[in-house]
Image (cartoon, rainbow, N blue to C red; front, side):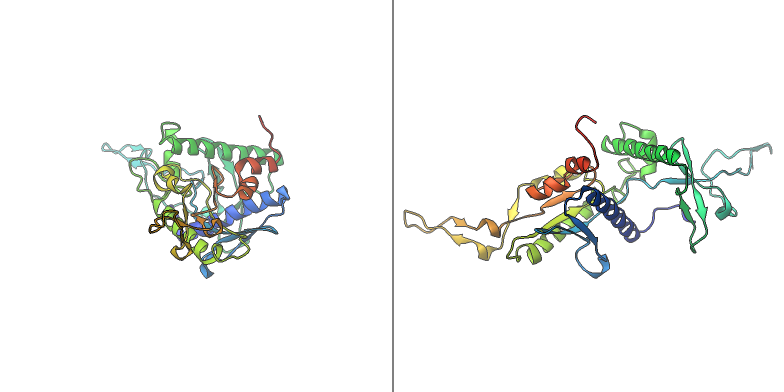
Length: 307
């Protein structure tokens, strides 16, 4: 067993799968005519596709979890001896071996509440599952997971002025020891920069060359850039770009050398048409906003104003 965070490429695969599964299920329930297809990221520049009869959205996924829910198991710690030879319990972090861990009862530890897990040996690796539990208990456990995640999110957004006792369950993000490498969602500056370039690349290669003007580009994540949006992304909200050869000089009534250039609206492209996350989103396209805004998705799941 390893107690550290998995490698970034593995995290990327699992977060992409999770985001796609959640969004695909919402779209299925929504019955809006949109479908989702997750692509093998090792084979191209596009992570997933969103499409309906009129529009194709080419998406780049940059995601990382806010927390990795902690596994716990009952264990009797071996005693240690103090200077006078008397045994006493270990009160500091100590690395120990857990024998026969595959046969032990595992639980999800939610900062004071444990959720029992069922274990199976049907695959080479150990699998823990919540399936098969009483429905009411399962619903309550899911509510607890959502609640503790919400508190962690509130703590991260407030830079731990709230719920500070939970900060270490988020890899120390937002604390003095944070090197920003473990920041959740799209809050890593490296991912913001890579994501922006990928939007430019997809837009230049596909969006600008689509004669039917039916291609859009989108940056997708689980959590929006909480700490870095204003510094790194807000300036792109109303920015557009084009190729220089699509500019044409404007004639002036005075006959002097033209200093103005014009461009067709169809030859302009935003840096991204959509920045979608499950916590906050930004849109440059009205149709995408009507479908993928959090308000639209909330109503698609049966939510109502004031609920």
